[in-house]
Length: 473
Image (cartoon, rainbow, N blue to C red; front, side, top):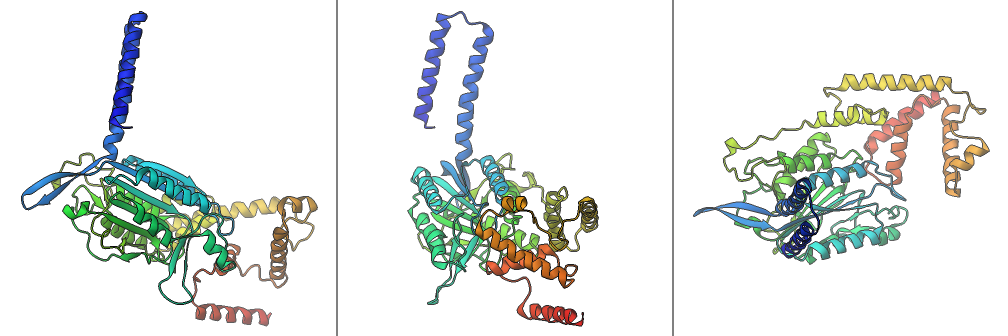
């Protein structure tokens, strides 16, 4: 709301109020309520303006001076959790909501878009930039959570990264369809160049090639006059050869960072470079080396000098410059944070994921006990259930169940293939040698051409041993 608009509303409010004071005999209580309402309304507007406006303290040879860096702070959050042709990511919904709350606390006006197709995603970017990207002193933040993919050109050259809208097909089955529906990083670069605001930060909780930006390995600089120069910065949660899990370490460390943990030098500010370095170190550690975030600035000499700036939301007084008197931020233990998320879960896969990431963790014994209890409850339920007519079948077999479960021809084909595989496992007594959840993961990795968890030599060794054990029987 502009100052002129606020003034008009204020004048109108007081004209109506004074007019009614003379027209009616208001009690003292009503008068007080009017005053309180007016104060609350205008204080809230001033608070919102002050939260989105940021000044930084810059040091030079002549001493310290304050410089207004931003007049407005705006964020576009895009999350895709429900996919038509890719595995769903149910955790994305909670991730986007958590990031929204954290950014609003940090003074951003947030626009949220969930499960867009390509046209809706394009529309969201363009509307957001048109609304907020024309003013030089605004800072813009873009955050995407969902699938990412990288395609290597057949002619050679640098791989091209894509973020995946909800309707994009599997690139291994329909490469032309994927390119027509996916959102390339070249398009993101075009948007970055059309923004007039001096600072823009793009965060992608997705894995793909980051060819549009140069990777940064320099030590983050202190706040200086260069900070205010134009910049386009990028941070991704992993490289092109990695798969981002539905449990997002990236989201959690981003929030921890802007709450104050990334302010390592305790100067009261967090730059985009400090943020990238912090997220990279923490996510590599907490993911047990399975994720390697990338960060850097756009390959453009006119847009790679400055640095995006956050004022930590956990910092009470940003005017304090003495590190010894500054509030110390509480460090969050990654393992403990992860355990808090899964300890109340009755889902075996959540607990097993904790054990995979922290095999020697502090809560391993408790996790094993919870798994044992869940398995015992599951066995007890299975014993109470009546046996199906076909002892070899683990799926619905009656006509009623089938019509509810198998709605399309694709469903019937998929079910028939699964049924044959399951019956073959049982007929050859292989059901005790496999874990269905891990089997399903192997199928998903092959289907979507993901990097296998085992090397080719390890897979060959395991399969040869398995075949030999089957032949003996």
